[in-house]
Image 1 (cartoon, rainbow, N blue to C red):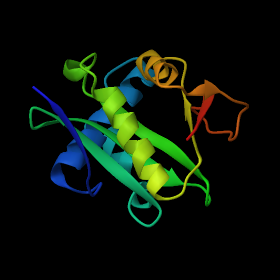
Image 2 (cartoon, rainbow, N blue to C red; image 1 turned 135 degrees about the vertical axis):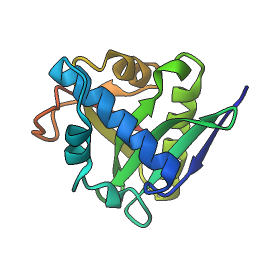
Image 3 (cartoon, rainbow, N blue to C red; image 1 turned 180 degrees about the vertical axis):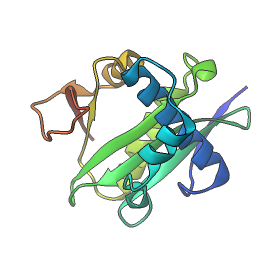
Length: 158
């Protein structure tokens, strides 16, 4: 089986399911219980996803053996800075190399926009994501926002 990573509209059927799975996992971990369908719907409503499309960003979908298995978004902050968001690899596909390929795809998309630095924030409990970022050269930086779920801030020069 092989991975492919392509740019895709965030509203495509497969991207929508991946975005729901992402929100389900991060919300369920945060609350310490399974998120309800209504909570997932509410969390995805007005979440700014429209900025993850040209000319303000990109949304990537990773497929393993043709099956949708991961996603990530890139949101431009300014002419040289972008934010990485909604990074998700379905649990069944973790540790297969897909996360690294997803980050490489995001970084290539960022370079195409002229971005020189990618930044992100994440939480303490998202240990797999923090490990993935560290493995691929993202380093802790001072806080650049005050988001309610931001506990770690990372960046990488491109």
